[in-house]
Image (cartoon, rainbow, N blue to C red; front, side, top):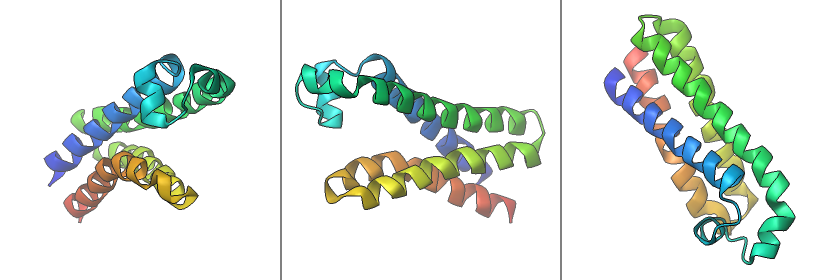
Length: 128
């Protein structure tokens, strides 16, 4: 169960690194505008600074999770697990907030929150 938790946490972190890239560096690209539903380039430009900042939030959550994984792989299970719970838990909490923000965001919230939720569940079960 611990290996599954680590794989899921790593995948969740990588997803959030990708979200960081889209929000912070590819915000005006057509593919990113389609993912986030920003519409025109002009609409994307109007929110570019906010997206840039939010992208870094996603990067920091990914980094917390990745440092937790590195600590676990180095034999520091307690601090590693704590960081994975913090990073993946924050990812999941953000997905929950996105879910309650409106019905149109539920699909994105499920995509954003499934991997961290599964990582948390597996890690909790592994540590019991």
